[in-house]
Amino acid sequence: MIAIVGAGISGLSIAWHLHQKNIPYQIFESSDEVGGYLKTLQMGKNKAYLFEKGANSLLMDDEILDFIKQTNFEDELIYANKISNSRFIVRDGKPKKLPTSPQALLFGSFFSTQTKTKIFRELYYKKEELAPTTTIGDFLENRFGKEVVDYAVSPFVTGVYAADAYQLLLKYTFPKLTEYAQNYGSVLKGFIKNKSGSRKKSVSFRRGMQSFAKHIAKNLNVQLNHTVISIKNSDFIERKSRRWKLEIESEKQGKKQIEILEFDKVFLTTPPSVSADFLEPHFEKLALTIKKIHYPTMCLIHSVFKKEDIDFDLNGFGALHPKVENLFSAGTIWSSSVFEGRSPKDEVLFTGFVGGRQWQKNTELPKEEILKRHTEELKQIYGIKNAPIIQQFTKWDKSVPQYDEQLLKVEKQLKRLKKSDIYICANWFGGVSVADCIKKGRNLALQFIADSNL
Ligand SMILES: Cc1cc2nc3c(=O)[nH]c(=O)nc-3n(C[C@H](O)[C@H](O)[C@H](O)COP(=O)(O)OP(=O)(O)OC[C@H]3O[C@@H](n4cnc5c(N)ncnc54)[C@H](O)[C@@H]3O)c2cc1C
Image (cartoon, rainbow, N blue to C red; front, side):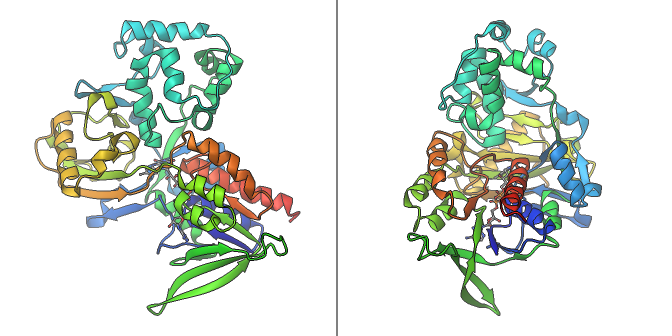
């Protein structure tokens, strides 16, 4: 029997694939609902508002579409509106559209002439081998200059990884760029030759991201309100028995109870701190390394305004705030412009982000202060006259795990789990996005099925 710890999208993806092959498993989830970082709040009359408190969207490719079809959820799928292909960056206090085509990049006015010349020169870069510690910030500043990192790369990696570009490792986050540098010298040449410049589509679901998790979970064996406390095997050192004992806390008729259940295999999808506690009794060094994975705090603020109160057309995905602009928030997604049905037609919904690695200090302020400063900033940038009609505040003490130098150590140490019958399939290794988690879950389940000759 297999135990899966955690019913976020990673755990659900593993379970769904095992379920198709009738392989017995149990998922234990500490909270009272499935989804983990897929968390949707619908509220108001006729559920007119839909707030994504965690992941906002999912990047679509053939494998993801195939999974959505196999789970029979295609009818719920919604694509991002076309206008959301435009991305904005706040520069000198106002949102400016980022160039999306090579022509707009080289002939438009977003970047200085000096930067545009440097971009052009990148085409003549010689092939190079990169050190595993190369960061995305250093790599791109070398090739395209600081202005590109400050005004395009840094805001982008904040938007996706809540990270600092000068700490995020290229190897784990943009492996294609490493490949292009090695094979072509110029990464621009790499993009042209592989035609990989076309953007994947952002998608969500009519009733939000969590509805997908709930749908997948419908036929699965999920035990909600079951917290795994420890994972032990007294015979492990002598390798006498491979069975892992899970100590699980749950509640029955208002009374807490602890049970010990035995499993042949354990799939961990839990955050670093939780996984480290499980691993510590048998894999101390690995546990200590995982514990040190950085995990910044992030606050999400959903703000709804009357459309008529705004002096700006929200024709885009949203606007990111470069750190060099010294703003309070990291940026906003213009959620009502991206997907239909997020707020009534005569209103607009912003999803604002305060925090991430570069804005940690701001998350330490009291909630009221964060709301006040974020709202004032929105009003100033977008020329908003009145106060928001609705505002919702969410704080993730640990938001997105950082793919920085610590992960090189984790990668080395993870080898210790080989032949232990404990498997890691979590967002802190091998890809953080929802799409990555779905794919890793699938690959792990299929590999397991193949290895077991089932
Ligand atoms: C604010 C925010 C916005 C994001 N936006 C996007 C986005 O727009 N697009 C995108 O692709 N990605 C986004 N991400 C990243 C993505 O959402 C996550 O990386 C992904 O959902 C993680 O899924 P998971 O199943 O690996 O982990 P989790 O979602 O963390 O699931 C782990 C589960 O384990 C459970 N658990 C924990 N401890 C125990 C225990 N002891 N016993 C039993 N269960 C336990 C938890 O309750 C949780 O349900 C975002 C992340 C954040 C924080």
